Length: 147
Image (cartoon, rainbow, N blue to C red; front, side):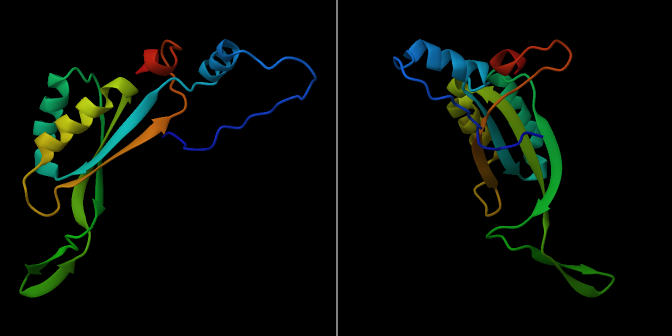
């Protein structure tokens, strides 16, 4: 969905004064480097409604949910099916992705962590990473306006 490639810059070296900060800032904004981030959380499936309610309560307007499988310290478990024991190495989880302005990241992380916590092993993890550019396809709005 969102690539985390490095920003490619090209420059022409000429003699003369250094560019002002406002020019540099304007160039960065034009390149889509307004402060936006993705908060990605891996949670237990039965916690989805609580997490969604917590995010709605703090004003988050949209999120993406994907069914995933994985393991961490929990390392799966064994199940018995028709009398035979099977090792289940990959456990079902949900991946939630929320695109937010940087100012909202701490509130979003706190809301997800509080709502998803059971206190048991396998509660999940939360990751935060940068968004270089966002575009709302319908309107053409960009960056934080597109969130």
